[in-house]
Image (cartoon, rainbow, N blue to C red; front, side, top):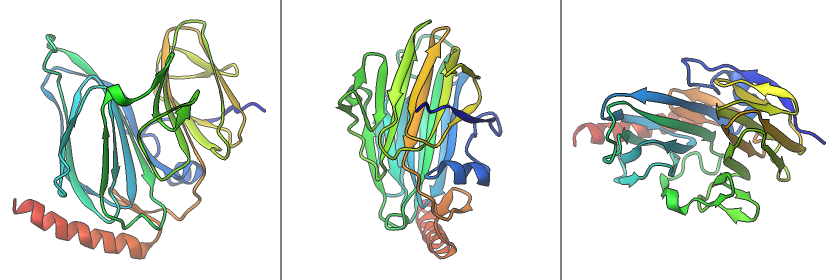
Length: 273
């Protein structure tokens, strides 16, 4: 069986792809995805303290170093090409600063950001905060495939998440083909073309669009007519109620309100520091 293009999703505000209720329901547990490459002539992208709850956040980036700190004193620096997992649970405030690399000698530079939010299952949506910071040297690379989450050709990512999922970053040369069989049960998924020109079973996958895949366990075959790069994400579907408010996404109004109360309490202590 082939796993073909189901539909294309255009971004909101240029970088936000999973935002509308119908798309979230279609791709659950994936509930938000920011992605894109930006050109800069400053010291970096600085995102100040802001709250989350009820979600797990996977941030994968290139071209900058990530300086992170939060209300739970989980502070770290992750190098260019690394990945971070945040289990926001019952509430956290954090800030993320994507810093121009010290060895960069150019005034203008580029960074690429992929940030994925995943709705936590009920047993974790009010849990304690958890972090995993994976440096680029610790992510497996098999030929032209970097393993962000899950497994490829027997190589497993060290990132541990509470989902049966696969997250790959694939580079293809012109006229190369990538073939991958969907792991059992991972019938929710999408492709994000980063650059170049790729086709999925003859369907062109345009840049600046999210390619939502058919819901089956079929094989994925991608052909590159030019040097290309894309990320591929798949997961078992979750099919839970999705209740949202800002950076909080929960399975019920009750858990949302409890977490918002915790966020307000944490925010008071953050503001006094």
